[in-house]
Every structure is written in structure tokens, then in C-alpha cells.
Image 1 (tube, protein in one colour):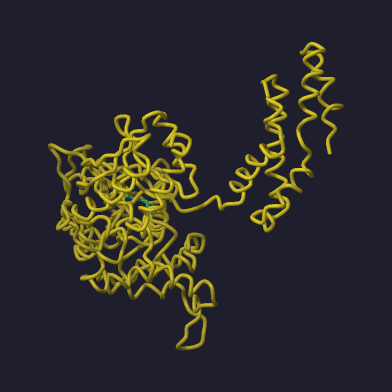
Image 2: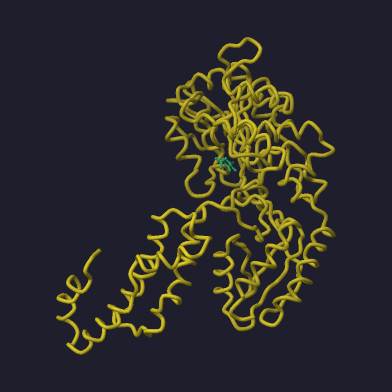
Length: 490
Ligand SMILES: *Cc1c(COP(=O)(O)O)cnc(C)c1O
């Protein structure tokens, strides 16, 4: 143990008068010892099973906090240093230290594919399969037919080809990795022609020009930001051209006087010059979302059928699966990408493979896929069902928290997110909270600090909980959490 008095007081006497130091010394002596706190804590069965080092860490944090307050000259009431009072803070601190850092939250933002909140939620089928293959040994790289070494990639390749019509497929860590390895394989030390309107940045660190530079390919920009014509591509082709690249402008849109070259035109230009053509689809969707109020976008199958040599997209955006980068293409090109040494560094693990296979299998039944893949389910939920959830929650909250917080239902717009369909909104309903005697910012912070944090959207001095991204079975957690967050006011 550090002898605080011997250690600190010579330093302090320089800046405080004698009498203050005497007083501080008296107060500091009231702070109980770590051992004392520990003994008291272990009377409570909840803390018996928590590792001793964590108990001590929590105790020290609270005691040090008090000590710092005294030393900084703040007024500390002796009664606040009673063991029973300190024990309350210590218990809270230890509970906080003992829970996992990475945990579930409730998404009340209405952004379905929320990158900061983990993008797509996996369905139960995928989770049980994941637990089956990862909680046991598996045939990850073992061919059960021949009894010899197998390839992890073959586990989902056939399924991807069956669903998309592609000749071959490969899955890597994420879509950024898919673009990187495809460029590195096809266009290293060569030129890649891209339209100026498609030089996108996706979430800070993924910028097409930067990825290009890293892959050793040289970027040749053609056209203007709003319009690119076939002749722009044609005129830029040289003997050094390695690839014609199209990038889905996922997270923004150019409107007005615009023009893009169609896949058909680009593919025939590539064929004529024997240059491969690639499209980075970003989100990539296997089903048509236009019946649900979204703009008709070409499906992955349609893009493959347009003759693109390589198509890449994310596993955890509109597909609704785990983080992964899916590369589709001709057998010849996919084999080349597989042999790239970078593939080993970007390879997916068994969790991803297992979850991805489960998700893809759900797409075999188009009648039920919207029901069973949560991302598609949230996008396609009818407004009546969202309204119903909002009403259920509002009724419970009106009974429990209305003395300190107004509760209403309002019309809002949800978004698909994940860079998909930037300009398109989905009509939705939110429960609006307006605390009467607590700052909104404070409530928002308290909700973030709950055991199951609730993340809402702050708009015009109100807190919105958009019911599109909240499941019915989460309503009771929200009600309980809000009571806890507002507890001092209730
Ligand atoms: C999201 C996105 C990426 C990056 O995909 P990750 O799976 O997040 O690595 C690349 N390109 C486009 C067009 C995207 O929308």
C-alpha cells in the first residue's frame, strides 16, 4: 500500500495553508481501506463470483476518485465517505467493469443498415448453425467425400453461383478487400478507367482513388462529374489499360443533367478491346425492393447477366448476412484472384462462412426470404405493423414515465443506410420523448449507458425512437430502460 500522507503532503504544503492541510488529512483518513471495502463487498453473493482483481480495480477507482476530490480542494462531506455510501458507487463501478465491452444495443435510429451499430442483424437460423459449426469441429477445409483436404471457399461458391448465375465466386473479408484484391490481380501496374462521377468515398477510409493507389493500379479518370459517355472510356483506352471499372455511387447521388454509360455498352467496349470490366456494387441485392417503395435497382443477378467480368458486393449490407466481400466472375478471373497471395491475408473465417451459407440458403425460397432475413424484413415491414409497435410502446410509457416525460407518436422517415439508396426514405413511425425536467442530452446519454443501451435519434429538441428498426420483443426492454434512465425524476 502507498502511504499517501508521506507521499502527497510534502508536495501539497507548498500550495495550501497549514490549517487546510490538517483538514484534508483528517478527511483523507476517513476514506476506508481497500481491504475493508472488499470484505463488505463479499457479503453480497452477487460479487462472490467476480474475479478478485476486478473487485479491487473497482474499489480502487472509487476510492481514488474521492481522494483526488479532496486533494483538489473540493468539499467532500464526511458522510459521503461512509463505507455504506461508497459501497453503492463501488458496486455500480464493478458491474460496469464486469460486463462485456462489446454488447447488444437497441437501434431506435430507423437506419436499417447502420454501420456503427453492426449493420445487418443475423437471423436465428444463421446463429444456431454458427454455434453448431463453431462450437464443434467442422469440415472447414476437409472434403467429406474424398476424405482429403478441402477448400473453405468451395463451401459457399456453388450456392453463390446458383443464386446469382455467376460462373465462379470467391468470398473475402469485406467488400473493400474484394475491390482491393480484384484490382491488384487484374490491374497491378496497369491503368484502370473510372468515370469521374464514381470516385466515391465510403465512410472515411475507403476511397476508390486510395484503394487504387494501394493496389498498384493507376487511376484514369474520364468524363465530367455529372456526365460520362462511352467515347470518354473509348478514348482513354491504351495498351496499358488493365480494367474498366464501374462503382456504384452508393452513398450519394448526382441529380439533374446526368448520364452514365450502361453496363451493356461498357461490356461490349471491354470485349472489343479484350479488357475485363468490373462493377463494385457496394450493397448488392439479390431481390427486387421496388415493391416496398424503393427505387428499382438492378439486382446482382441482373448485373451478372449484363456480362460484367467481375462483380463485388458486401455480405452485411442489403444481403443481410455477416461482414464479407463477395466476388463473382468468370472461372478464369476468379481462379486468378484465388491464387493471389493477398487472398490468404484477406480470407474469411469459419464464423463468416457459416453465417453466410445460412443466409444464402434462405434466398433459395424467395417467398419467405423477406420474412426470414432481418434486414429485408425491416425494409419491407408494412407501416401498419410499425404503427402498431409505436402504439404499444407509447401506451406502456404513458403509464410509466408520463409524469416526467411527454410521450407521443409521430410520422418520420427511416433510411436503408449502409450507403445504400441515399436519397430514398421509407415512411415510418417513431415514439417521441421530451423529458420535462431533464436536459434531452442528459436523457440521451443515460439511455446510452443502460445495460442494454437504447440508441435513438435527436431531432428538433426531441428524442425519436423509430419503430422500424425495433423488434416487438425489444419493447419491454425499452420501457424498462427508460424507467431506469429517468429514475431520479420519477
Ligand atoms: C460499402 C461499400 C464498399 C465497402 O464495403 P465493405 O463491405 O464495408 O468493406 C465498397 N464500395 C461501395 C460502393 C460500397 O457501398
